[in-house]
Image 1: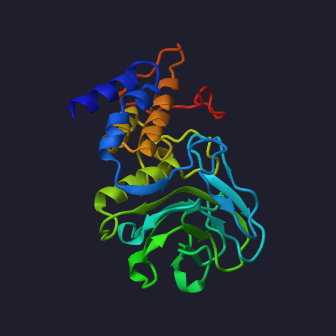
Image 2: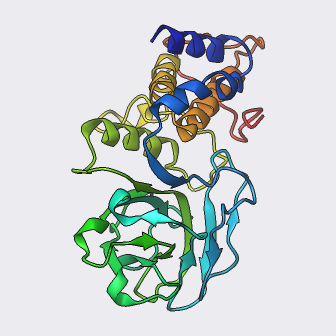
Length: 287
């Protein structure tokens, strides 16, 4: 805990948010779960995933947090993973976070995950899962162990972002195959998902994404207020869990704090109980 507090202090007061990415790698190694995961954080790097039928070219954007993007062109869209050698008994839970890039889900009702052990795709090695009706980002959990054909060595995955013939754009934040048992998202995981959704609620991935300090049922005039001590608390929370994705989010929030300046040019101090203002064009928040 003392080490983490030191990192937080350095991030907030050193003048360089990127120090978090350098100094906190040992935390990431200690706290990352045993899993196979694709984060799509490097611009242009699809991490081996490629478009199958009815999808435009895959790309990873260069926004503040990378996402894998594509456009649905036809009625049977899917994308395919790189070659794998997964023991099905040790990777029984699929988690995926995605949305349509305009902030609404693709106009379908279900998506699906396929897998293969011999290079062929078949409906008897697939599971469908529902898409929410009106949420921008959504973290889905698919219990693969419930299917009798999830066994042996899995050599590739296929994701169908919609099964309904819908059109639109799809944007994937990350995909994970988790080992061990999974009884649903814990209250702590749900809390982190809430923080992620707060950061990612905007259609434009380059929009400054402070965590709002007040939400409904408070008056609407307070909803765009982001107090610096709240941002510092959230930074601490991301550093405490310490996955590479969390460290990037902590860096983004710290960078926004360091770029939010008073009229005289001095940096607003962390834990100051006043709202943070950012120019409409984002100012210098994208270093």
